[in-house]
Length: 85
Image: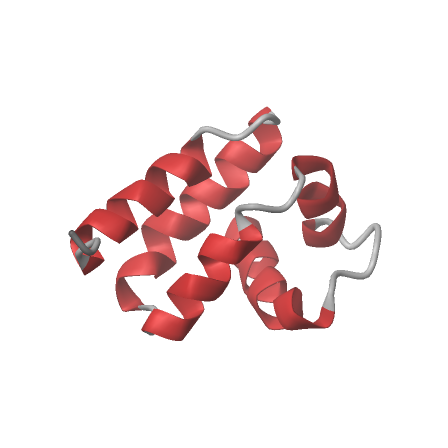
């Protein structure tokens, strides 16, 4: 049975809260709560892909310590902006 949009958003919110690093739990859960419901399907798919990345890499990308892969650049800038609000 295919995953419904609501179920997918709930799953992604849960994955955003249950990371390996507490800082990423806080950053990604805030972003997920603020943004997922308004995202297009393609952006949700990209976010799902982003969540498969290593937490150390995600943290260094969000904090600007290293340059992220190009496909994630805009989303990571948005995540960083959400966290700084």
